[in-house]
Length: 164
Image 1 (cartoon, rainbow, N blue to C red):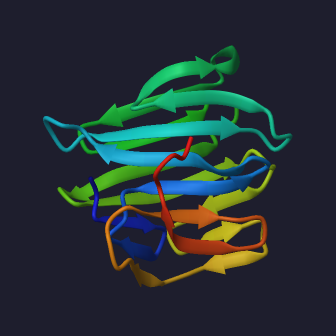
Image 2: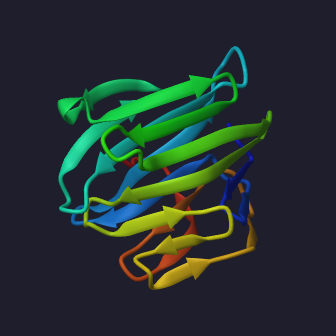
């Protein structure tokens, strides 16, 4: 389990690499990054939505559960991963392992089940152009605290037990 997740220029410590989002039924896991058991391979679990809130793909630990019309491609190297939309070349998520306890999301362009747009760049995390996070260092008091993106908020430290 990671102990640090970097999103753009933001550093989150004592986190398991899970991003939760608010949806109609409560909190829902959008994305999780983890390390492979035998090596430092980055493993991505993600539900991919489009701007119209349609669930278009699901990847679990780098393996497709479904991929609507083969729309996306995932490429991996031992310590990096890139999920792209084939037709446009849009990078949905690009991540790499910094070391045994740290992962970095370099780029991201994704949507939540409610249609919220999340953009991760080298310098910031932008949520629906209304929330911008830059150069923050956040430390959770204990392990197991998720990062939560709400409709009009961002929080840190949600318990992960029982989330889908």
